[in-house]
Length: 441
Image (cartoon, rainbow, N blue to C red; front, side, top):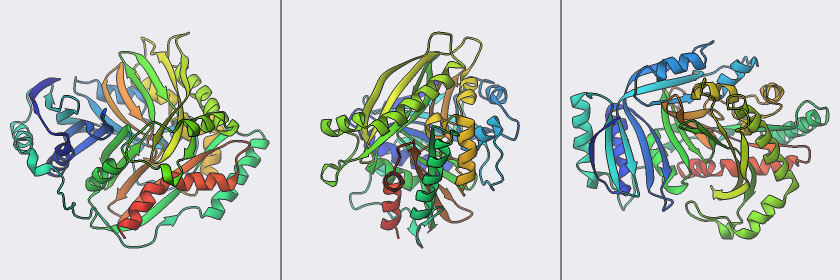
């Protein structure tokens, strides 16, 4: 990748510039908060030029052939159902999204909030009109600084939020999962609820900007699939590969901050609450089982003896929740590439259960909805041994055909789970979307 232009740029204008480019030329965006917890670290692909849609039977080899045909980075989205197909779990539910989609772009933008520098990137001679558009828009950052009097409303919610499972039905489904655990079918299972709200006059990227400003998290992504605009506000990394070094950071274990301790942005956890979360046998069991599952998933694609676990039961705060995670590390085998690793470990262990295939079958039976983008992964691939991929939790999508916002939340069920507590945790994870829908109604 060549740097075509590089110039100082104020962090408060970056997402406004991204919105203008998305509107003018089409773009997909990844961003995370910088060291200050607010200013965005950003990478975006502008003006999609080539696209690979995963049809039934498409696999890691097909994705690699598309991604590594040239030096350009690839951005993409894998739907949860790609994993169902891979593991032979049948689903008759109607889907509105493909199993996955990968893209190449005419231009890329990268922003470093520490250096306050914006780079325009391309691997060869770009389209002159596209480069001129990016230069023209970037030359006037003052136009993209948020208005002190507030931006126009990004959507209008026109009805009530509907659930695929009522509170009572969700608790009954948790009770059924507990019965399956006692029968030996599964040890842990992630059970979710789908929420739908009718919307009009929706600007999905404006919603993306609004959510990032209020609820920063490490793995934000905006990705369009036809009439579906995916807005992922995920805190969880599925897997990163950097020059062959593998890192997965599964999240399991949740504790809601008391109202008096709610905080803006990312911050360190209160020590007393972090200790309480780590000391919980139930939360410990959730995380430890999924770490073991992810270690096995990663080991299938890593050099023998290279897989390990570190920072076990680390805690951070996001979305007014304390979350616990661990790091699974390894070294990618020299005969494999990043898509081999993703395919072997997909769908992510933290949003499925163990054993994985049987848990997927039970999820398919008990959840009346599809997951699609939710519990899938958004990827940025730089080469055969370089990639970063999120777990698409805390993720919504705007369905322009149906005129709806669709989002999900769920919790991990283990043998000592309490159905009412799991219902409360699920609602807490959906809280920022539920509050936004109420605000926009």
